[in-house]
Amino acid sequence: MMLMQHDVDLQPLCTLATPAKAAHYCYATTLIEVQEALACARMRGWPLMILGGGSNIVWRADFEGLVLHMGIRGISARAADQGYVLVQASAGESWQQVVDFTLAQGLWGLENLTLIPGTVGAAPIQNIGAYGVEFEQNFVELSALRVEDGALCRFDHAACHFTYRDSLFKKDGHAYVIIDVTLKLSQKAKPVLSYAGLADFFKDTPIEALTPQHLADAVAQMRRAKLPDPKDIPNTGSFFHNPIVSGEQERELRSRYPDLVSYALPSGQFKLAAAWLIDKAGLKGYSDKGVGVHAHQALVIVNPGKKPGREVLAFAQFTAQKIEREFGVRLAIEPQIYP
Ligand code: FAD
Ligand code: NAP
Image 1 (cartoon, rainbow, N blue to C red):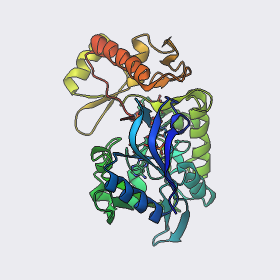
Image 2: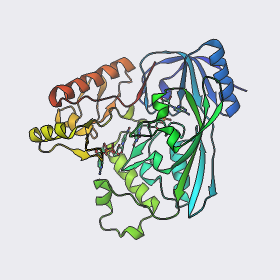
Image 3: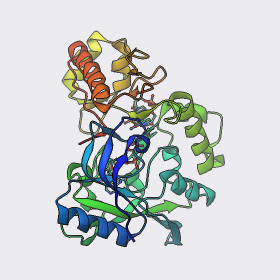
């Protein structure tokens, strides 16, 4: 039976720790509870926000609607053909539980995506990615409830419109509640070592000796060295997307900054490392009134003062304006902002 609560504190439900309250809140642990909560919001005309682990959001102010907190748990696996295993996980399961589940079985696919906070249901939203691997590479299908009428729908890979840190679900914010996700993992070795840090880590190890757990351990070590744990220092991971610029703009920037960090894309455009731009602008480690740029990773805005979302966003705007003035490059914010 669904339990509807009112006037609920949202600060502990956001890794950035921005203070806010929800007028209505429901932690749903079954499909029926999600359906009941959606029907209730529809009937009362409440705006809807779907919450997972709160690691990619900013509360800008109180939310005068229903925060539907996804709590459906469970992971299962079944063998598929040609050495593949299909893993199905419910949306409220922690992403790390799924990664650990696959690592324990020696399956390849999610090892580079270890230690990304949050839930399974949020992983398709921005097609989570790290160290040269993206969620979509192992994705088979997902099921989701359509918010407008509660219908249960299935989405295959093509239907999700995955791109770099984006998908149909991010563009169509809150049109669907993701319920479960099916992934295809391989028993055959498939190490992705395209990132310099990982390649360096294993430069003396023969490729055939690598296991998914080795890669996951290396990624975990690198992440722990660079990224602040939100339990210690509130943050929401990368605050900005890496900007994509034309070849012409990249050449112009490189003529001014020979040490520019950029990556050529198949389209002929270039991805710039936003962290490099922020560092070059002198903001790495800079802080103002309890909000700042992390000292070890300039793409992470930290909120040790647990300041309101508006103050964090003002700091982000200050950062983005400085980057635009110095490099002529516009930074876009990665986390979703509510309301
Ligand atoms: P939330 O923050 O709760 O929600 C994010 C968005 O997804 C919201 O719009 C929400 O409405 C929507 N949503 C959540 N669940 C559902 C659902 N079931 N149905 C429909 N919509 C839903 N991201 C990366 O891509 N790569 C990284 O390497 C990475 N590293 C990070 C490191 C740190 C320290 C932190 C704090 C964050 C990092 N992130 C990274 C960002 C974040 O962890 C991911 O985006 C993650 O997928 C968010 O999951 P969540 O459950 O916390 O989502
Ligand atoms: P890094 O290795 O210092 O690299 C800096 C940037 O350069 C990254 O953003 C990465 O882009 C890009 N890059 C590096 N090597 C690349 C290659 N061979 N090809 C294409 N692009 C390359 O990055 P980091 O800050 O330590 O993070 C490591 C990984 O974790 C990155 O993939 C990053 O996206 C991910 N991460 C994401 C978040 C988040 O909240 N979204 C938070 C922490 C870490 P990409 O970002 O496109 O990979």
